[in-house]
Image 1 (cartoon, one colour):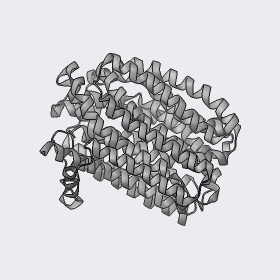
Image 2 (cartoon, rainbow, N blue to C red; image 1 turned 180 degrees about the vertical axis):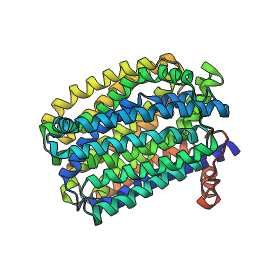
Image 3 (cartoon, rainbow, N blue to C red; image 1 turned 135 degrees about the vertical axis):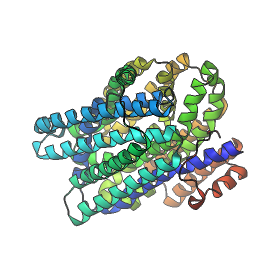
Image 4 (cartoon, rainbow, N blue to C red; image 1 turned 90 degrees about the vertical axis):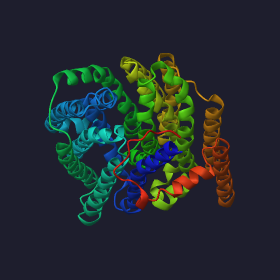
Length: 496
């Protein structure tokens, strides 16, 4: 009972920043989409095509290496040396990346965005993304130390700062789409320095070349995979801009932003189960696979619940939040929600490759994923435009994700609860396809909303049958009001 209560409490804490981080953009969307055009959002999306892969490349995958090695060096002095060694290297690497981007930003903007006029947007997007990468080391420390309260406070604070800065710059100062990037950069810098001061008092600054080399041995084979993975997720927008219009990129970008809240939610839930996932692997070794399957099933249900809701009610979200120029994103949200929902399995493959030190496999599999994405995107976008890009991403994600899951199962077997997992994903995909059909056929709205509500009810009924939704769990959750939570975090275990 106590273990379950701690799990639900920490789940609640990790989901709070997700709710806030999703709420602020949703609140600002009706305002910003009436000030910024679809072309503005298209240029922002194209700038991120460079910013995301480049920031991942300069980081060399050290954030994942730190997460893995955290459990190997648990003493206070060892933990300090590991953290600061990786952080110093990341800061130096980011400085080099910023310098190179500044020097070549006109050429990069012309190549990626088709015009040198947006070179500054590309540069600031890289700075903002790189700064956000740095603070993840501190947040990983909180997550792996099971200090959910600290993790939540700082994540919510950053989201709140972004909202305030972006509202000021876009609405009052009217600096355009660049204001969104400047807001991300300023909020990231403030939180990074606040966390730096906190950790300076918590852990003595020290460095260790050996720990850094060990981390690089793990992270370097991951770097191509991280780079290819980000490119894989950004290639569709580049191709839409190349073969379509910048406005089409903007509509696709809005659809992806709404659908990606599903992935953000899953990442929050991942923060709950990943530490226990690693402990089950490290403590009993190979025998941990026997209990991981039972442990993961409830999290699969919890993760796909929001994905199903976003998919079913994408029409209502887009219609209420955006003007008609953006309504082409409705079907994009449905298809991408299915894609992000399937990525749940990706949350379970990476840790197994890290644990078994088979990180080179992630790079090989990333080549497969990127190849599939390129091969499918070109014909799909040429024939169907932005919605074709969404279908291509879903198809390549399912194919490559299945391959990755089978390979990971070979290196570290997990005894899945196959019947329960099949029921969860079958209802999720069936409901999503039903929502898509209802939208395509243009059935009367009362009919559409009734059927969609019924499909959501079927999923809830499945949760009752799986004993994830129970009176006991509901009472535990109801008792965990924000005022009663221990915001300093807890060092208990996690298990549903």
